Image 1: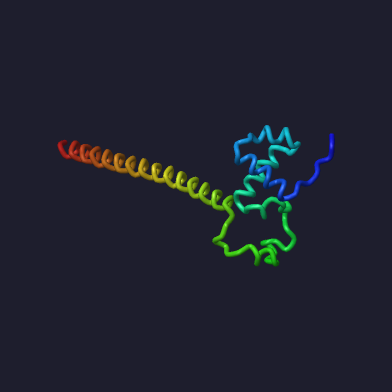
Image 2: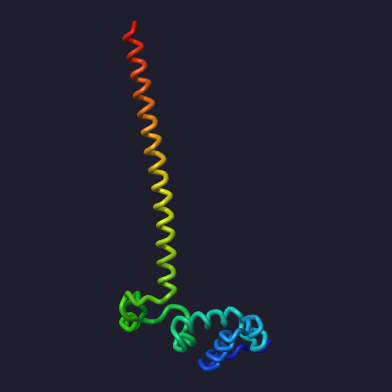
Length: 135
């Protein structure tokens, strides 16, 4: 097994262009020896950030957002979220809307059950009292 070499940004862009032209990820991975996972990651990074996103280092960054260092200042305004954050937020909103819908259905069910129980109790109380007054 040969050690993997790092591809330049230009080489990665060329591979992404081949993917865009219709070459399958599996075929391109076999031809070049690049992992399919890497091709998918590069494609997503290129779509999100352009060529700049192709040679980013993975993992936590020194002086990252949590520490409020220079990377946090260069990150831009908080409303300029990467597309992954936006997709996560939309998925979370959809999940919460489903939860609220289920809770509303439960409230409606119990509200109707309480009305039914109260109406039945009132009618049985009226029947009992009228029956006792007849004696």
